[in-house]
Image 1 (cartoon, rainbow, N blue to C red):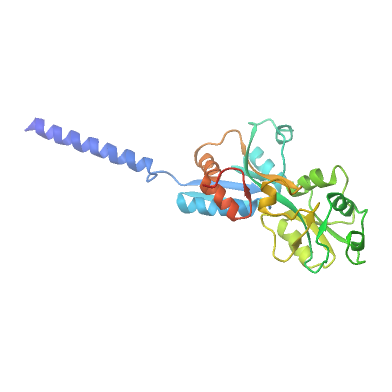
Image 2: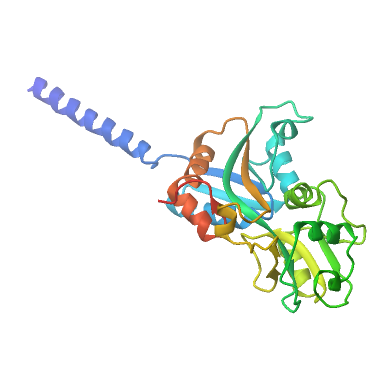
Amino acid sequence: MDLDLRYIIGIIVVILVIIVAAAAYAGVFTKPSKITIAGSTSVQPIAQALADQYHKENPKVNITVQGGGSAVGLSSVQQGTANIGTYSSNLTNATANANYSGSAITQYHICNDGLIIVVNPSNNVSGITSDQAKQIFAGNITTWNTVGGNSSKIDIFVREAGSGTRTAFTTLVMNGSNFTTTAIIQSSSNAIFQSVAGDPNGIGFDTLASISPNVKALSVNGVAPSQATVKDNTYPIVRPFLFLTKGTPTGATLDFINWSLSPEGQKLIQQNGGVPVNPTS
């Protein structure tokens, strides 16, 4: 009788151990996790879409997405105030780790983006060359009739210092030339689009991924910006969208990044305007 009771108790203990282990594996007893993402306002809408969907599938992981610019994305991970920094231009390891003595910054290339030049929809100019773009933003071309438009003065809008979009445009279009001192500085993608939409003579540059319907994107060197022309590299102004981490991420942060690079994550990126770097199926 005692033997049978011990046998039954043993079986019950084994069953309880299996149940507890299975529950823990399934996340029943896992403490809620939090991921903070900060940085590029160009990457922000895509990062938010990824965060929202990941949270739906993993409700114990709460993700906060903030803007501030690419420089904020880099400094936030360096200082440990964000788990993931977002960055919207090429970033060398030397730049990522300059004046910084912590764990090396790790980069994850999540997608590509076309850097577009936008004008007001009422503008009859539909395309310019990359050199004309450089001359306009440098202040050497000052009226629209030089590039096929009317005789109005060109109003120039640019992103702020520290913006990855500004850095990318400086590298890919300006080729070392400075922006004109008469350019009006805006601190976000939305601000650029809103400014150009409200100014018949305005011109600016920002992200294809989140282009406003209230502006018109110009062809550059005869190629219109689109996901297809960014993917096949026929559009001449292409830059990466990056996730940055301090050292090698672990736990929920690593899982979120891996999910973002998976077919499900890449498909969601494509649906939100980005050009995937991995298969979507």
